[in-house]
Image 1 (tube, rainbow, N blue to C red):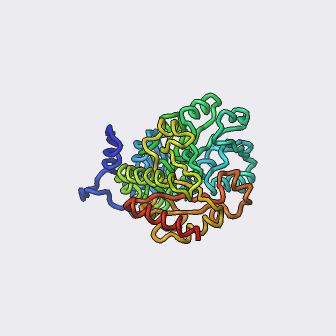
Image 2: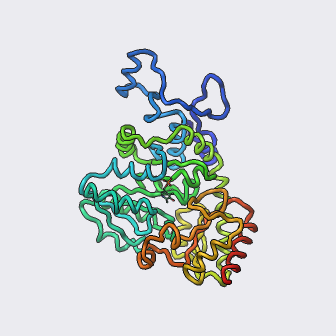
Image 3: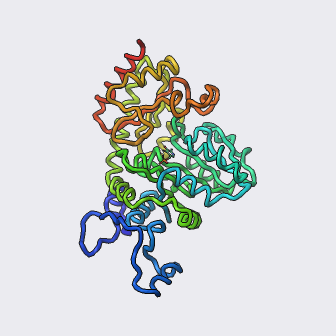
Length: 393
Ligand SMILES: *Cc1c(COP(=O)(O)O)cnc(C)c1O
């Protein structure tokens, strides 16, 4: 694949080799298998002596294009794609961990990742240790000889906490632990964890990489020796991304830079307006000067991204009323869409936890998460302000 100096060019120009039809845009290769020239060709392909596609659970031109593109954008040696973000996360753990291993992670992790740690890992005697995302100076005491992986999200969901990736990269190296970063909120346009020493970067491609709320997908990119283990596991266990989804996501990435610029511009503007609203107790956004890790955010992120969280005064009830009063903004579980989406974790995704448990993971009763979309900023602000007003009644 040709390498270009700039992100935008790489995102647009990384393309699977053209067919004899000389199509300009990559076609959809909707085929489950590929032809062999003869018995010898088939033997050589199965023996891995010859490159090429043999079966779409193994590889397909559309998934290969997406893998190559993400490798170049994340600065990775190798990569893989899966049917969803969770398939990427589970496949990675399943491929790299053995019985008895330990994973160090943060309490504020994505809900289904937390469920893998707590409901699935125990089957294989794999343990996890949660550390406080806001106090990395305390992490060393939790490292055990069994600790094989450090797994973090930065910015975190929904607390928008930020970990210093430069520090973390060194910490992982010193302790000889594999560092995996879920880069879903930032995308490679905003932050490239491999530059700071991450061994693997995972994405739910369902979010900003697709960016239009259409398809599910997951990507894993990083060290070749680790990707080789992941590939072996994935090829035989079958969490493959469909060629259609790869085709959609790869085309979406052509506009990732443009979209992240606008998501971030709208995000920062909304955060600034909300900071002045008397109905709001606290606004968290990476590029607000009031963010406790503002300096770290500036160091490792190009922009602040599209996720803004805020705490509305009046607790769970007010949070619920606020959501019900929205007129344009969608109430939906997704994020990273062109359409602005609001969620109230305390009464939805985290309703099953006790209030104490919620507070432990940073979900205060009045916390609202907004995935700021690409509508005009004044329409987004108008809807949020009118819903804040209406929710006092
Ligand atoms: C959505 C999400 C996931 C899971 O991805 P799916 O595509 O829904 O399986 C993992 N991590 C983060 C941070 C997410 O937002």
